[in-house]
Image (cartoon, rainbow, N blue to C red; front, side, top):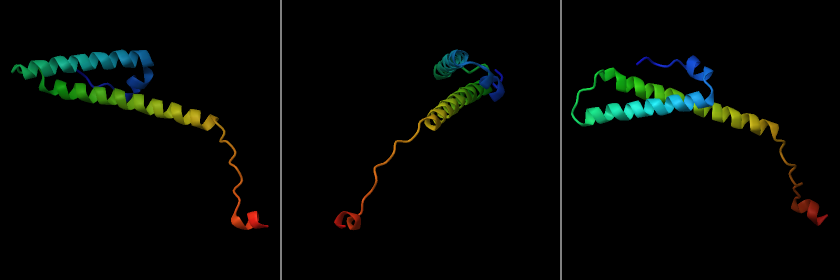
Length: 92
C-alpha cells in the first residue's frame, strides 16, 4: 500500500475520489476486522497508510468544498443596509 500523493488526488475528479475513498474505507474495515479477531495483520504499516490516505482525500474534499463556497460568496453582492438614524437627527 503506497501513500497517495496530493497531486494524484487533486488530479482525480469527484467520482474517482469518492470511489477511492470508499475502497480505502472498506479495506481499512477489513484490516481492523482481522486484527480484532486476533489475527496478525499482514503488514502493520498498512493500517497507518490506509488512515493517512483516507485523511488526505477527506482534507482535499474539504478544501475544494471551502474553495467553492468562497467563490460563490464573492459573486454575491451584499444587500444595501438601511440608513441608521440617530436620536439627534430624529429630534430635528
